[in-house]
Image (tube, rainbow, N blue to C red):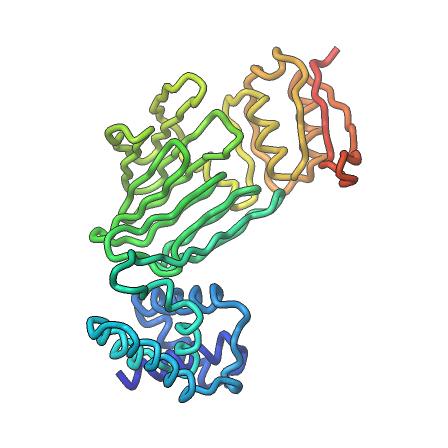
Length: 341
């Protein structure tokens, strides 16, 4: 137990940028020792981030904080005695005040349901973000996406909530399934890699499996089981879906800055390009919208991509530029696409 106290102290010092080189080397060796240590570190780091503003360890009166905690717990029923024991076990130099800030979210009056603290990550338009989850799973968020997840996962399932697009690399844990919830589709996995497209303003929701296996539930109906290189696509307008064979990497390479298109309608191509570069692209001609297109772009600028599209597809385009709206704010850049004359 003393070793655990020491590690928590070192994590606190690292997060408060008050750690020596020797202490940092000890913590690094512990972190790299096994997956459990990494998951525990992520949990403490997430609690730290959720408890803003960050506490300065040098300014913490641990004795006074502990006295307040005991006083608060003593006002409750004796059934909460284990809470005090648990608290004393984790009362390292920084964990104690963090629990003062967030503990009420987990230990409420026995007559009330437990409330879980959540953290929400937003990836701004034109930006992709990488998120480390408390269980060791990794998520890449595409432009304009939101991911909500608990600071500490429950004992049964690891539930996260997505609006937008994300690639999930799920830490293997068969006893605690990992569940991605979206508006129309839920994905259940134990340890695998898959992509989910679920933008709120899109009529298409899709799940593409790269590695392993997942169960996909659509509108709460019985689960469809996906195999690697399978993709389930739901059209919310018609309420129908289909499962197709595909090259899954084409749908996941966006996280590496690659835009790959294989026989996709130009309307969808421009939609993905628009999200990547934070620009509104409107296809004005239905014939152009349904034209299929194949290409791979890696590292090209928006202007270069538009130039290449104009050379290889029957289109022309016009830049509208930014305009002031009624709220006196500038809109995004806008591009209109037409059929080539």
